[in-house]
Every structure is written in C-alpha cells, then in structure tokens.
Image 1 (cartoon, rainbow, N blue to C red):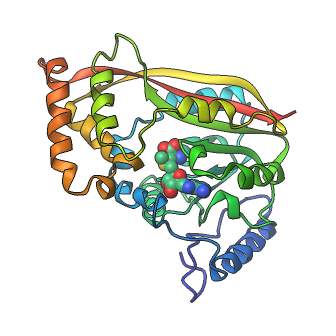
Image 2 (cartoon, rainbow, N blue to C red; image 1 turned 90 degrees about the vertical axis):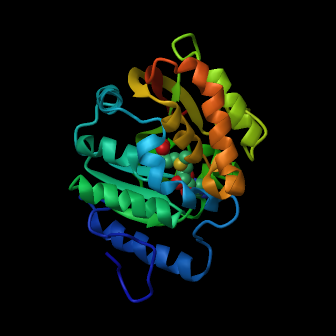
Length: 296
Ligand SMILES: C[S@@+](CC[C@H](N)C(=O)[O-])C[C@H]1O[C@@H](n2cnc3c(N)ncnc32)[C@H](O)[C@@H]1O
C-alpha cells in the first residue's frame, strides 16, 4: 500500500504497533520527510548488490528454522505483546518467523528489491508486515521504542558510530537486541565447507573473512552488554547447485558483483564440490544463533 502520491517507500502503515497507532503516523511522516530530503536511498554502490540477490535469498540463503524462533520466544518470554523492529530485514525472514510471538513487527531495509521480496512472502503467508525503506542510521527521531530489536546478517552494513545512538534511542527499557545469523557448522559433518569457501574467497569482492572480529568488537565500550546466546542446530539436504545459489545470495558474490564471471564461478563451485557429492545430495548441519545484548 502506498500512502500518498509522493510514492514513498513505505509499504504499509497499518500495523507498525498495535498498541500505539499514533507513533506509526509520526514515524511515517518523518520517513516521508527523510525521503524527500534525500537522506534515505535505495541502494546503489555497495548496498545495491543486494538488489540482485533478493529473489533467491529466501530459497537459498542458510535458513532460520521454526525451532529457532520458538527457542527465542521461550528464552525471551515473548508473550504476543512485544513490539519488534527487524533492522536490515531483507526478505523479512526473521520478521516473518518471529511474527507469531510478538504484538507488532516493523521491518526496515534500504533495498527496494528486498522489501518487495518481504512483501511478497508476507502476503503469501497471509501476514501483514509493515515495512519501511531506509537505513537504520536514518530512522526518524520519533519512531518510538521497541522491546526487541533483531539484526540478522546485517550489522556489518551499518555505520557503527551512527547506529549506536539509534539503538540506544529505540530500545525500550528492559528490551533486548538480538544479533542473528545461521551458518553451516565447521566440522566433519560438513566436509565440503572449506572447498566451498575457498571458491567463495576467490570470487568474492570482500577479500577477508574477518567477520568474527567485526562482530566480537561491535558492542565493546557501548551502553550494551552481551548476555546469553541462543543456539539451535538443525539439518537440511543440500546439493552443489543449491550451494552455488547460496553464493549468489551474498552481497560479495551476488550476480551484480560476479557479472560475466558467474558461469566460471558456477563451474568452479561444481568442480570443488564434486568429490563430496558423489552419492548425490547430502545432509548439511547448520547452527542458527542469536546473541542477546541488553543495556548495562
Ligand atoms: C544479508 S541481508 C540480511 C537479511 C535478513 N535480516 C537475514 O537475517 O537473513 C542484509 C540486509 O541488510 C540491508 N542493509 C544494508 N545496509 C543497511 C543499513 N544501513 N540499515 C539497514 N539495513 C541495511 C541490506 O539491504 C540487506 O537486505
């Protein structure tokens, strides 16, 4: 739903927060202002890489399974009343999974194709999911507060200095920030993993695997302190073709980045994985993880 003739990038206003609709209106007005002022943008350069990953993201990116959402709900004692904001929502995978456990959800992302995918998936699931186009750093001052802030595989995209004050502002008293992700376990249960990642690195626009460092240090010397870790291990069947598609869902090896190297990348992935998949599809073991941060 569009709100007015200005073609604002706000998907729907109906359900930002069931218990406080006035805040919705304020937030949308502010979003409209920010958009007109040119502060919010729709990708381009680095972030625009996600434009070409949106379509396949939900199908091929490592998933968050239902058991993970149930576990989070239990650990955080979600009772259907909490307000949740999902920053860097992408196609809304976290937002849609946690939807049954909270009172309201707002998904935020600067990439229109990702928001379109989220909108489609929400509609297919019969869920009304309010979506807001924009960066976390630019969230309007009067957007209100949220009991749960989720950030899945997106924290590294956010400017730390600009994002921290936003998190301070929008986290409700007693609230929790969940930094989420899913990865294959790196042990003998996924013997193909190293071969796959070496092809990834050869083609990746990002010539580092320094994720751990970024994530470990992000909240150091901030008003937030690390709490519990919520982990859920699960399995799924996997094929070399699906792993190649997984590469395409990453910003650093998206179709936009690979360009005319896409076919050679596919060939290299297939060749590297062939020895591990001689007997056809195999079981992949993954771990979905949420690290919880709260105010000190
Ligand atoms: C890898 S996807 C993560 C999608 C989903 N949250 C998940 O856990 O799978 C990263 C998303 O972060 C978004 N993003 C990039 N920069 C951002 C920013 N500054 N603020 C909010 N979202 C951002 C991208 O557009 C992309 O959709």
